[in-house]
Image 1 (cartoon, rainbow, N blue to C red):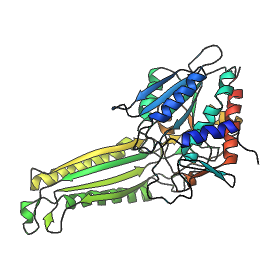
Image 2 (cartoon, rainbow, N blue to C red; image 1 turned 120 degrees about the horizontal axis):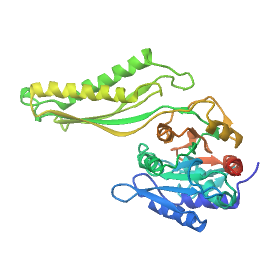
Image 3 (cartoon, one colour; image 1 turned 180 degrees about the vertical axis):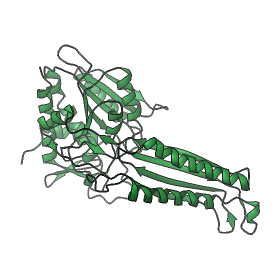
Image 4 (cartoon, rainbow, N blue to C red; image 1 turned 90 degrees about the horizontal axis):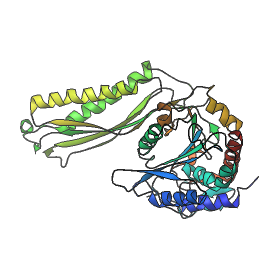
Length: 389
């Protein structure tokens, strides 16, 4: 079994040592990347969030003729999920090699991919590229693909017009062409508190929240039995779940507040906007019913996170390019969502292809097999060759 280059391992280890759990800032990692890009002679641009605590990074390795338009995007997210409450065999933010595997939070999802790219900057910058390579790093992917929205918008605004994108989420170096959309919602029901012995003086927020939760289950069953299906997925239909309900303060008090959290993951052929509107309309219908009982009642429907699905055609150039670079061609589709749908929705044909197995992502003792890192190294080097004049 081949081993990754020492420079690659050192780069990944350095990234792992930076705790970029989504609730915290990713700026230490972004600043590290900026410094490495500067040292390689590559200018970069940061796109911050509203309070400036986090940032996306966009950089371009230009073609040999200086061109910065067209080319290929290499995309990854910089945040990781928490380790709270997980039982780790070693320090999560200090990468360790054991039995041919590199352990640590983010090794698989997805600092392994980013680390390989940074380690191979000398080869990428030395290549006589016929078209540019764009590096796009995002924040807050783990809380709903939040940061990548403005990142993709900036790529569009600058008219970089890449002909394809590779999102390096762990796919065991398979070139994945399809996944479902991801959509997360918070629906707050506001009633009127009263003593439980005087229900006509109150407005029970939980009662209306339960009606909404039942509606989610009805729509879920409808799509499961009568909606479109795609056997390339483990779950072949659009799925949805009510995942959390919070409400009430005591058994003798009419609850004035209740919040329903739900999500759905739709097939690409499903009209995502229309489905969201269906839930929004029902929330408005329930609000009207609440007003009939007490004018103080209200419902606040809020989408917390969302990203479109991915459905890249089999004969897309980016699919062939990925295969030429060593990716495993497959018709399989994955259940997890990624930022790839955002690139695709912007007109950039995209595949998901990165080292590691999604089964290890988010888990205690997260790891990536060293062979996967080697495979990714070879992929990036072959990409440079494929894009060279």
